[in-house]
Image (cartoon, rainbow, N blue to C red):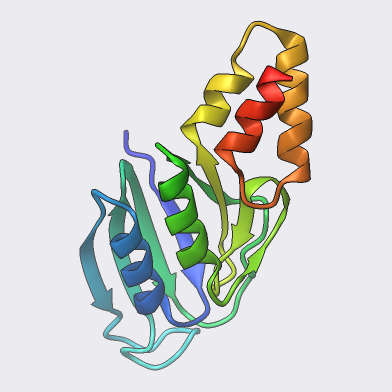
Length: 156
């Protein structure tokens, strides 16, 4: 059984996929096509379909005009090895989009992302509940997550 996330883009799907694939190591476009017949979304050739891989996850996408906009009920969470990777992805994905609390952002196509350092996951798994509480409180005050700040909270 295969599980594939599916994204519906109103427009600019090709630009979005190029951006995502360029940013996430190990990513690739695996298939791209346009529907050859008229559809309720538009004339022949106006509806685009694609499949792609981001890191270790499979996705499908369609560009077929407006339907439902992306919202927070679906996001892509990227676990980053270090602060440089957090900073790189944050800068690129937030360009033309908007930033939010706790490592969340929306890219210029409206898709929600969580850019999370692996170190946060490690700190949150600590058996010391007071340390986890301090790290959580620090994270809740951040917009882009900062490893040094999270580690400082863990040491307090």
